[in-house]
Length: 342
Image (cartoon, rainbow, N blue to C red; front, side, top):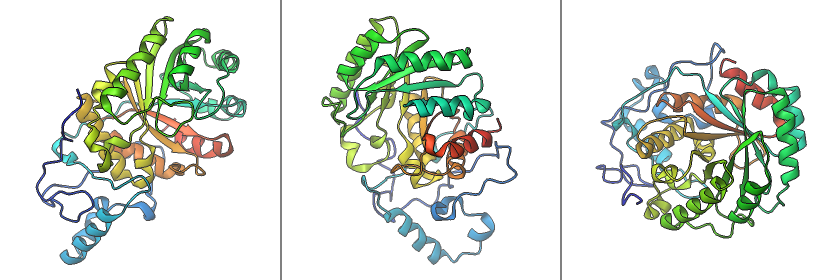
């Protein structure tokens, strides 16, 4: 069952779209530097007040600090106001585990870019997510099998999985994909022509995910879901009481679409990580957070900001990330992977 309330919804003086905040709690800490770069500056345009250097905070007048915090809390997004959780209630469980990446590839240009550019940064534990039939595009099972064979020849020890949108496409993909593809991912988000079944209702969502998992496992493949992450922090969706832990129990893996929160700020991305830990109970290999390094997409950022977001999530123990990228900006993906110390 979904949760009746988000775990932070009863916090005193905490209200979505309000400057009434509980300043008695410490800000989210930044993790230790895990990159090979001497410094990892967070873009000043997205620097949240919670990570201002102490030397500055100590000299800011209290009135100015409160005013800036109110402005930050009132900042809207295109998809609705964000309500950050009292994440500091959870224990800080920073991880020194190497980050594992799921690397999506959705066209032949992407296959070529992996083989020629990104391949040098691929490490054991990484996986490739081949995508076809997303949004309104036709499913091409032949391309999925061809691309899988090309990547497996270069990366024999890395997992290869396939993803598509909509229950109809999931059934077709499960029937048609061949080894080395070992998992089918049900991409689940609103406003996609290939996914007329989408609903915000959580019980309906669970039913769809169960149906997808049954179709996939019926062909001896692992089942996964790539759900929208909007219900994590966007207050207008709290009434649907999504529980990502319950969602994850229906499948073998979950890739949560959290890229919008990195676009907002590293602090917001860390807040999403804390919410997922609250739902799942702990970080682990069964779920990943998504970042986007496609600057032309609505939630895309450059490599430095993506690294800052990854660091913020790693402070909460998260070590699994899905790295969305575009062949047109392969340099940003390469910089991100290199920045992880690869």
